[in-house]
Amino acid sequence: MALEKLPWSIFFYSVYVMFVLNLSIASDTLSPGQFIKDGEKLVSSSQSFELGFFSPENSKYRYLGIWYNFSPEKVVWVANRNNPLTDSNGVLTFSDERNLVVLNQSKSIIWSSNSSRVLRNPVAQLLDSCNLVVSENTSSHSGECSWQSFDYPTDTLLAGMRMGWNLKTGFEWHLTSWKSTDDPSSGDCTYGINVNGLPQFEVLKRGSTKTFRTGPWNGVSFPGTPVIQITFYRPMFVYNETDIYFEFQSSRDDIITIFALNQSAITKT
Image (cartoon, rainbow, N blue to C red; front, top):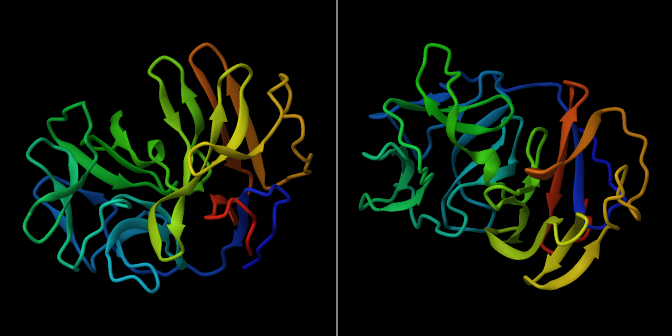
């Protein structure tokens, strides 16, 4: 494993080189009538990612999250980050309304995908990209998704995830730090794209104080951002009438790139 620091002051920047994967066998899908209990998991087909319940170090609370199979301590997405379970009796299942939900011991809903689109026969699948998607169950599981975890990032940006805005709907993709290393609830720092005027990246501290921003987009780049020669991922910025967003794709299958916002909006190793 190699860890390399990005000279941007706002991010963890982690590069993982994969050598060994846990070869445990588990399903990557969940259908109505099925459930995942605490201690059980969904595992993506490539064995790269796992979804299940976890507790951060020094925490008694339980959360539904996704992490790397080879590095369980690196949690990249949390469902119920602001509404934790107080015991290990939580389950992930489908509600009668065909939403993906987390239930506590008394069967109360503490988290829901809350999709406005109702599917007749949904299936939830943990993809090899780390995206948890809910779609109509077809023989190939390739139906259009009604909900996906990539639309609701926590503190981590992965390949294929967006950070920006859908200008037609007003929907925003942005990162929000954990409150602390032991508490994944929404912290003080957010990172996203400001679309007032020409778009630019900015970090907000405690909701309003700007601690970092790039220069506005000039059609080629963001002034003030270091120019870095990168060979293992491809950044992309989309700016048109309907969307403004940043995303990146990996160039090599053996290297995983992670951008994560920490609690202080500064780089850590």
